[in-house]
Amino acid sequence: MLGVSVGLQAPWSMRRPVALPDGFDWDLQRFGFGFFRIGSRYGVDVAPRDLVNSQIWTGAAIHVDGVLGDDANSGLGAQDGDFSDAKRTIHAAFLAGNATNAPYRVLVKAGNLEETAFTRNGNEEPDQPVAVIGWGGAVRYRTGPHVVNWTVSGGTYAAAASGVQRVFRTDILTPEGQYSELTEVPDVAACALTPDSWAREGTDVHVNIGGAPGPEDIALIRSFHGARFLTHAEDFYLENIHIEGGITGALHFDAVAERNIVGVNCSFRYSAPSNPAAPLDAARVRRTDGLIAFFGCDASQGAKDGWSFHEDGTSGMHVLLVDSTAHRNGSGGAQSCNAMTVHDSARGIVLNGDYGLSRNGTEVHCIQSTRTWLAGARAEARDVDGTSVAYKCSNASFMWLQDCVADASGSVENYALEANAGTVFIRDFTAIDGTVAVSLGGSVTPF
Image (cartoon, rainbow, N blue to C red):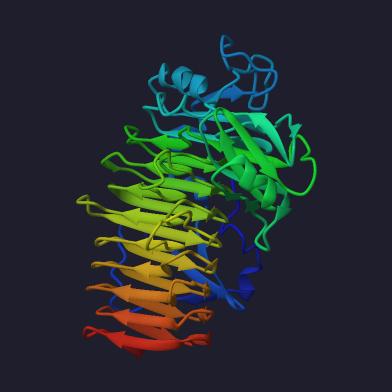
């Protein structure tokens, strides 16, 4: 069982209780958590595993070993962590767990999985309450190969790989610890002349990084689904799972459902649509009546938004992000890209976290009739499309910013906070750079 309040393990004597803001109608009957503050950071008194169906933790444990496993095996072990009869793929574990007709766990041995090993390209889903857990460390699933053999090809290096949509250097990281994206150019000749670029040639990919890439230095994101769940409608728990790529997002829940979705120490990055004109988000949850909670998770470099939450006609969505982050979202010609956005009439709580550097949009955007409380969060906007916006509240939405920091610069217009018809309440709000703008009857007042 995970400890109480992930990320803030401090003596009780140091905790100062924090009340929810007046007028923020979070459903305390279903999700009556206690909130607290330690110094400048905020926490919540909850053990993440307690948020999903308790039978998950006593049900069958199906083991997965991406190297030594075999999908013909049972996946069962003498105890949790016995991988002697493990399956090789997560989707095979789903089928075995579904056959029990009861909640279950998928325990995945730490290491790498690739190509279609998660859901068999979106074809296999669980039909029971389920947990997918990286056992003994991180599991990194990529919709492409982890090892690539490169051949010198004039001024580029080439490898056979079809359906590639985005290409990243894994040996050079951004300041946020993410892979650095290479720029796609029209052809091999342009690639040879352009440092840090890539190009397609039939079923080959060419890269130019100024030298020979090592076998694990380049991430090729191919046209496969990531962790996509269109039919699963039960509780879902993820821990130590890192998804790279996905044509409908790295993580995507779409079914109309009354359930909870929980993630701990996970990341969802580098989504790459098969159709660049229809980009989707790094982590996208729709039509869920229940709690969607992520602790210490990241949703970055999505094709469009980072974290994206939409009720889409199913009321009752409550979102809780604790110590979670999102950076550098929006690729290609994607428009209106956000690091984190809550839509419809969903309720959101964001504790701590860092959001920023999205392309052509707003870092934190609450829209339509949402109500969202952010405490201890930071948003950095550096958009070059003409307007940089750190926080934005639109339509009939309400937003509470408590001990939040905004930094918006580098564009023609720079807004630390924009109330675009929305109602914003602030307490100890810091604007490092950028102005506060009010339009269409919006308001910004202290609370």
